[in-house]
Length: 358
Image (cartoon, rainbow, N blue to C red; front, side, top):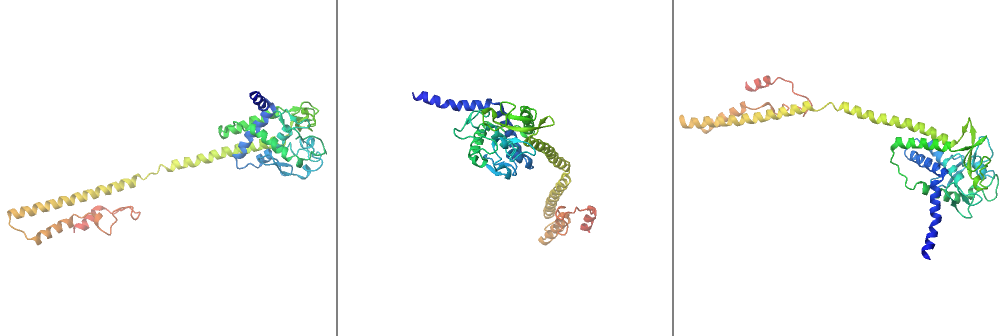
C-alpha cells in the first residue's frame, strides 16, 4: 500500500514538470529570460537591459527574487487591478502597463494563477487559495497585498527555467540566441484589431484572469506590430552591446599587433659586445700565462748556461714583462664593461696600446 501512495504522490510533480516544458508560452519566456539574464550579467552598459528585465522605478520594479522592489505612484492605487497593470497602453488609465512593461512583470502576468487558482500557461502552477485577478478596484487584489504570491510564482518559474541551463556559447552565441528568442516570442503573440496578446485564449481578453483563458499580457498595436516596451529596450541594448563587443575586439587586438612590431627590436648587438669582451679577457689571461712561461724558461736557461742571476734581477725582469702585457680592461680609469655607464668605447684601440707601450 505504501508503494502506491508514493507513486501517486509523485504524479502531480511529474505533470507539472512536463507541462512547464511543453507549454509554448513558458518555453518562449524562459528562453528570453535566460539569454537576457546572461547579457545583463556580462555587460557593463546594462541600464536598458536592467529596466527591460526588472522594470522601471516609476512603474513596478522587481529584484532577483521576484519581490516588488518599488511601485510607482500610479501602480499602487485603486486603479491597479490585474487587467490594468498587465495591459500596456500609452496615455491609459491608472497603473496601465506597470507589470507588462518589463519581462519579469510580463512573466507574472502570464504565469500567476487567476481566479480559478490554476494557470495552465506556465505548467499547472497551483497555490490553492492564492490567486490574483480583477479589474480596476477588486477587493483584496492590490499589488502590495500580493507580494508573497508574486515571489512564489517567480521562484517556481525560475527554478524550472534554470534547470540544466548552460552558458557555453560565448558572447557572440549568447547575443545571437537573445535575438532569436526575441524574434520567436514576438512572432507568437496573438493579435486582434487593436492589441497583441501573450497567453490567453481568445481575442476578447482583458487579461484580468477571471478565467484560465483570460490569463495574459496585453500590448497595443502600433504600425502593424506589437508595441512591447521591454522588447524595444532589449533590442536597443543588443545594438549597443554588438557595437561594444566589436570595439572591444579591435582594442584588444591592436595592442597585440603593436607589441609584436616592437618585438623586432632585440638586444642582439649588446649581447655580441659582451661576448667580444669575454673573449678578449680570455685572450689576455692566455697571454699572461704564456708570458710567465717564457720568463720562467729564460730564467732557467740563464741559470744553466751563463751562471747564476740574482733574485733581484729575476724579480725585476718578471715585473717588467707583466706590466707590458696588461690589457686595457685592467686599467682602473677605463670602463671594462660598456654597459657600466651606458656608453660604448669609441676610441681606437691602437692609440691606447701605443700609450701603454711608451
